Amino acid sequence: MVRVYFNPDYTLDSPLTDDDVKIENLQHIADVDVNDLREAFELCQNTDQPWTSRSEVRPDAVVADGTRSVAPGDVLEFEGEWYLVGAADFQRI
Image (cartoon, rainbow, N blue to C red):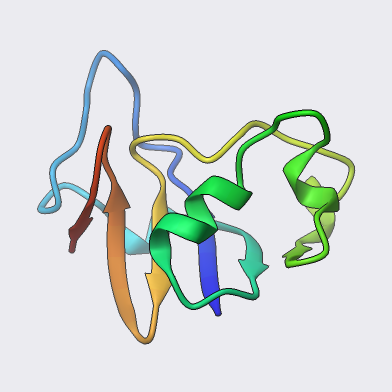
């Protein structure tokens, strides 16, 4: 399972590095029933349907009716490790 967090501290004007992420500020928004970061990221993209309605996703109530896609600056947690979503990869934090 991959846990998904929005990162309220990230903006395009002020991108973060792994040293800048404050875990205590992250907002847990969903759990995704997969065992791969890339697959979790891809499932958390809005396409022809809101990603929160996919069967693999267990969204928190605050985003259950839909929300933005997971994007660079957000954070995924997998097997006790934290990963910053980057433009093309995941950076362990």
